[in-house]
Image (tube, rainbow, N blue to C red; front, side, top):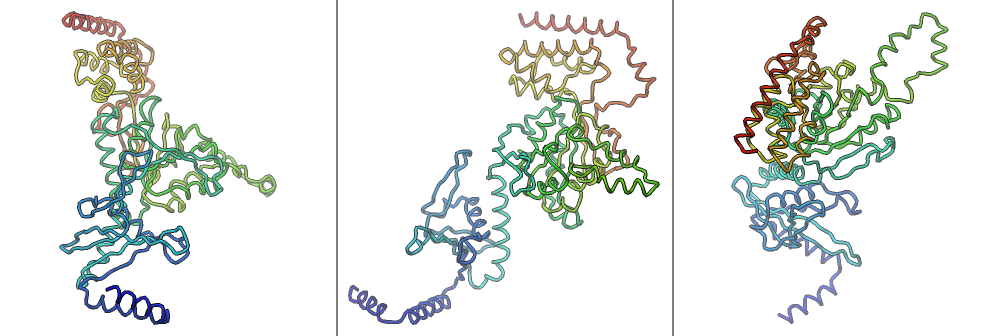
Length: 508
């Protein structure tokens, strides 16, 4: 054997390099001819410069991580980032992972070679398929790998919270931090019917790629969240991001110079993201754009000349037209799987052009807590499933004493060490509201509207959800304001006696 090895070394030194390369190729061709398998090389980079990353190599790495190759591979490399508790698997150099697809056995071999006279490494995967079924297997199997890798990356990758830094015209108009908001639909204080409608709508959107392509519509969805302060608009956005596993882009319109910078910021956002514009009615003056244009009547050429000489006063700022193009124009189709969310405290102050179908598809009204939402808050803050004063709380809600989730949450947070004291404090706050002057301004417990179902009823409340506020004219409001205060006082006396009797039975 040593003599044979020595002979091969001598032959290798004597024969020309071209002849050796030809012999090597002939040997591989002969091996491939008699082998029952076909081999496909997937390098880490396209070409020889090592700059253009091969996306198929990245997908193969994620796919092998998703199937947990520990059962079929003898040696793995483990890693974990500082910001995550998830352990990532990767195939060790020159080891093989076996897989199955449509009844056929396949294998992935990870090759890592050191580049001569360099510290760099050349990485690649070799995919082995049965030769007789390679044409029927290769394309569907790679599609399966890409889909599985995309889903795994969506679950695994660290989500981030972006905000515009005032330099949107440059390459990096956003700065970001890790997004770790704990809000979820399980902990959110919403009525069950409203919560289920939101979850179903978000699920249908996330799974609707083929549907949106079939109907020729951009894969995006618009939400308008409105209601008084403290009803949980920001918490709902965070729950949506955690449910969909999307990045969040918090767009501050006051930092955007003009429409061009707004378009540049939109282009820089990634797919699978939520673009949020909070307090759309207060960010910039958009409602006055249309009225100002209507007052610009130019009956004479003198006014036209002066307008041209003075320039358009819309230049150098974000206009309603620019924001409309941002949400529903051609530039809004430069990406896919995006959710655009507007929030406002007063929907009536938002320009109707921003609320039509295709821009804000779903209108979500968030109001004061209903009983189900109150139970969720008590469960989250105090760990209680029931309490003897829950009936009293429900009676207060029916009498106009409902509070916002932020108000109830703050009371429970202050008194979280004693559950009885916390619930009694909530009852006292509700009683105070019943005797206060804001009885008529209590909002409903929440509702949801779909503009793509009935555009003409955009400002109407649906009848299928309870708790929506009625529309009163001036006369009815006056009659409602002149309610019988004596009956309210008697009701509060009964509530206090009920609370005292319950406390006495418990020995408090």
